[in-house]
Length: 381
Image 1 (cartoon, rainbow, N blue to C red):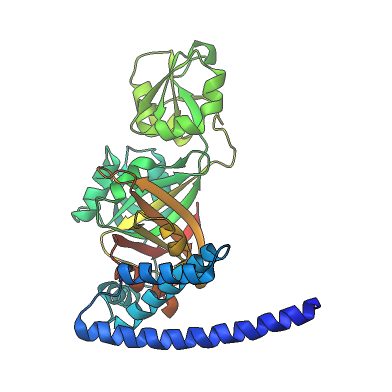
Image 2 (spheres, rainbow, N blue to C red):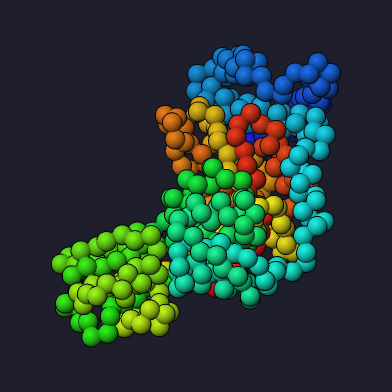
């Protein structure tokens, strides 16, 4: 038998599979109607296990794994279809609809904005790129920014979320589980770290360097070349510069931004100490309520998944089925729970897509923890 003949037979089988899939989905709709009438949940793990046991036995040796994968995907499609039929709008769909109608056409130029650190911090630089006339309120820790937004003290907050060289800002990710917020916009800022000291200080006399842990990580190669220098972690790079300025010492320096030199009367010993000249940090601008501005093309989610094989694959398959591009997938351990994780998804999509709204509603109606973090656009600073 030649290849064309084999492919012709495969085409015939595919046609039968499609017809059977349509029939199965029709029966799925009947099941959904029954569950709605009886007030029963969509998910029925016992029934799914029974089917998997039966079909893997029918598949026989060598094909049971493929049968399990195929029917696991069918279960996911079936649950999604049932949820779609049973949905009566949902809280999230209503929140999104209201945000699309109420959000102004232009991102605000003026606002009261919470930033971590002091004047000269990179968060302040990101804030100045996002807002023309911001009124900045500074907080010592990242948690203060979340609290200021949640309590209504500030309309927005600026937080670093990840760096191209040193990865995610773990403290911010850990706090994201604790607070209710939405991302209104994000910005990628080119970060150029400089080594600053008091006027008259020489490089060979520096014995201690102050900086934030992220900046220290981003400048690890420079620090490896200068093992004689003690490294002291500060809460912020601008705070580090201020500490050096007020230290009364001529053997200390700070890894900080170039504009901190003028702010705190320091001189530059080295104007580029980061590992990568294209070192960038991504900052998110958070708000208390959902705001979706024109051009928003990125969506962020936070969710947990069942602690069982294949759960992450099943989740990613939902995005793949809609042709959605995942731009970030981050997992963080859940405190107090062994080997259970919170997952953070960023993907490219628009809330004007009905398929995307159905996906979000499907995730919202699931049994696991789910939080929609916002739909926004990202700019380069």
